[in-house]
Amino acid sequence: MKKAELITQTCEFSGRVITVNRDTVCLPDGHQMDMEIVHHSGGSAIVAIDEQQRVCLIRQYRYAVADWIWEIPAGKIDAGETPESTARKELQEEAGVLATSWSSLGKMYATPGYCDETVYLYLAKKLQSTTIQHEPGELIDIHWLPFSEAIEWALKGKINDAKTLVALFRASEILKA
Image 1 (tube, rainbow, N blue to C red):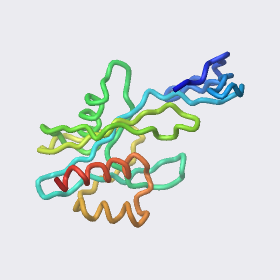
Image 2: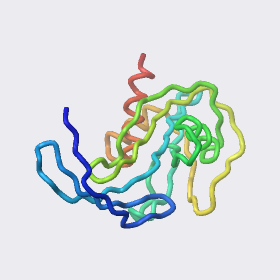
Image 3: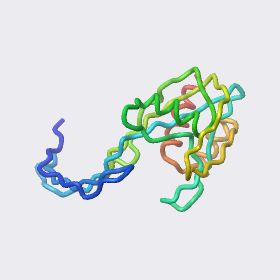
Image 4: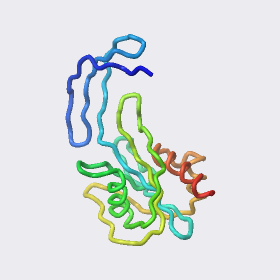
């Protein structure tokens, strides 16, 4: 299938986390248009399940939505990191947990209408406690609750974070098997 063709690209903003470009593109149907695209290095997110079938959820303050939201541990992929190494690092830093069993839950696009961010999802099991290392400015409360309750929260709208919803539902299919 034919893809869009980039005609021109102008960097409008470059920051610590994102870059914003204004692209002029020719779409597969021949239509030409200007698009503002947010570029992000991507991230990894982890469904951590302990021996009691509890999942780690964090309640984190997110300034962009001016609210405390329920999420699974996750973080941005830094230069030189692989998605899995980021997942291992973030699980330890945010939840104080190491895992010896890792499975991929695939990837997802966070907001593909204007952003290229890809989030890689993992299921982590065989957990062991370690030291939490929250970064300055991270406001995080760690909670462990039955996996079935987390799915109920997702269905009832108590969890609204996209990566968390996708990861929980994908993990539920694996955990049923």
